[in-house]
Each structure stands twice: as C-alpha cells, then as structure tokens.
Length: 85
Image (cartoon, rainbow, N blue to C red):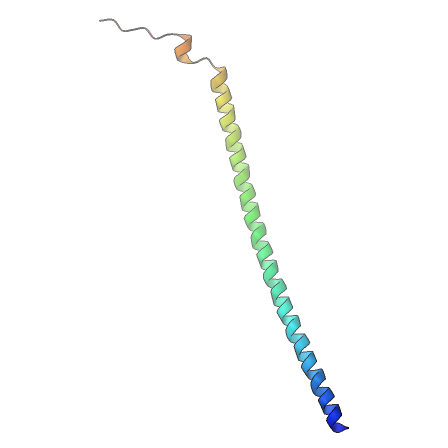
C-alpha cells in the first residue's frame, strides 16, 4: 500500500510541476506577445503620423498647382519686348 501511495504521490508531484512549468511558459509567451503588440501599436502611430504629413504635403502641392493653373502666366500676359541695338 505504501508503494502505491508513494507512486501516486510522485505522479501528483510530477503533474503539479509540469502544470506549473507550462503555466510559466504560457505566461512568458503572453508577456512577449503583449510587448510585441505594444511595439506594433507604436509603429502604427508613427506611420499614421507620416501618412498625415504626406496627405498635408499633397494637399499643399495640389493647391499650389491649382493656383499656378488659375493665374495667367507672365509670358502669356505681356510678351517680352525685344531689346533693340
């Protein structure tokens, strides 16, 4: 009976250690995944900032092109006088 009890107790100890080890491993994986998520969020925020800057630059460039197209060109408005010698 003692042998059976000690064998059972050894199995219980082994299973408890295995569960503890697996739990620790999973917690470490979750922590690593959470750190990676935070890093990806920071990268996303940075990329959104760059996109916003590019959109503003594109809008400014489009406005400049529109102004140039709307304003008559100096050459078209008044032809240059040839210099006579």
